[in-house]
Length: 297
Ligand code: GDP
Ligand code: FO1
Image (cartoon, rainbow, N blue to C red; front, side, top):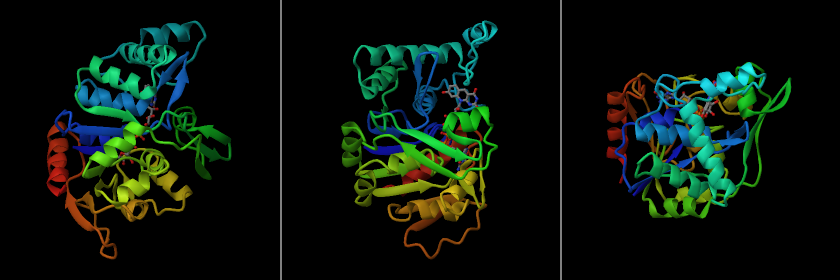
């Protein structure tokens, strides 16, 4: 079996190219989770499940394709404004998850139940049962990642990024990491998506003895999308492919960067390979996923 570490956009694009299988586990960041109108939203988990189930909105890379927003609009008309624009079908997922949690399920059990509902075989696992939150420090004050990204549109200067909460992985996460010979770090944000997973007690150590293949979410000094550059800079990393390599240099065995990327990584002792990493359609996701698998032992 093999395990993929994932956030909510770059790695789901890669997962679109893998076969849904019991032999695949995906450990997902939960540090961007948030409550909205009483329901627990786990955006990265939902994007992973929707992608593997083939229902993701692959223009926005969140929510369900073709969803309606009747409840969101009805709430707004009644003066109840939700920060995240939640689709009606997407909200059904949040309601089921929240009910399962209310009746005593763990987040892992609730997530696996949702995998069944969406008829996927892949084991999608939250990184932790603890509430872990990414807090972004800005001149406007400290804020939840979603406030920074949605309400403030990622515009404020970022002074620091930190994690609040107990950094404890689940037993299921440690089990799949232990059982997998290969671990794939998808092209997700190294600070706010992969960073929280690697920060969990024992995870980085567990990866030292594994064969780790990572894909860069940057081409040279530009991320394909999102706030990765700003956040890396705030954490003292060069906002570039080289900075991503620095984040993973102690654990990675094969580092894949884009074929157009001229970054010189020859001073590192891991293998560096080039491929077309821009996954603008399902065929390109499949080609990159096949390439990643060809590098696994
Ligand atoms: P988030 O949870 O929505 O922040 O998503 P992730 O952390 O999973 O993904 C965000 C990262 O994905 C960004 O840093 C992007 O540069 C990267 N990304 C998005 N699309 C692609 C793509 O097609 N190829 C690669 N290599 N990276 C991508
Ligand atoms: N991102 C937005 O920029 N605007 C939204 O209204 C929005 C709604 C939303 C609803 C459900 C969901 O699972 C994700 C949603 N996202 C939205 C994405 C989300 O804010 C972040 O991009 C992810 O948390 C990053 O991983």
